[in-house]
Image 1 (cartoon, one colour):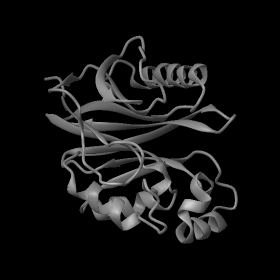
Image 2 (cartoon, one colour):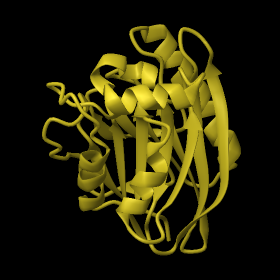
Image 3 (cartoon, one colour):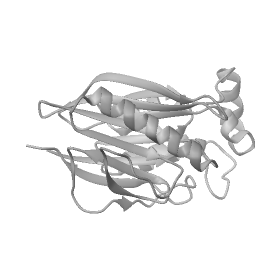
Length: 230
């Protein structure tokens, strides 16, 4: 079984240069138009995952975990929808995993707080059943502007995900906020800039690809095809 996976930091739903308006429809359209089975998303406005899943096709599942700046979220949402480029990350944040492949089902969702300061960072993971076999997929957005903090978050995520997987195949992807990184027990399957994929028990089929997203976000979406073991 082949799996097409995608990781993308949405920059809280903003564009470069700033668009000056809400871009949920534009992000949803490009995401729906790409080929993927699993999408690992970071810096997502917390009210977006349900909308993105609905727009990605019938049967698409989503799971999310709130990250930072989510107190008084209804007020933050109102401001972010009206003035996204003024409020920026203060509109609230989340990590999200979207699953839309036929034959893939989410059987568990787990989270681990990696740090609280300077901002709360979370490991988010789902246990999937693919072709009758378990697969654990982790989604990470590590601490920014702090190399030691980024590596600490990544290591904590590695330990937790391998423990949860208990020998099952593993995929860990996301925004690690470092360009070079090694994680024991996981193979680096490629990436772009600070966005990476790490795997265990999975075979990458070719190199990762960056996808065209126009002005949306300051991160390029990165896609990778994986083969599940026989």
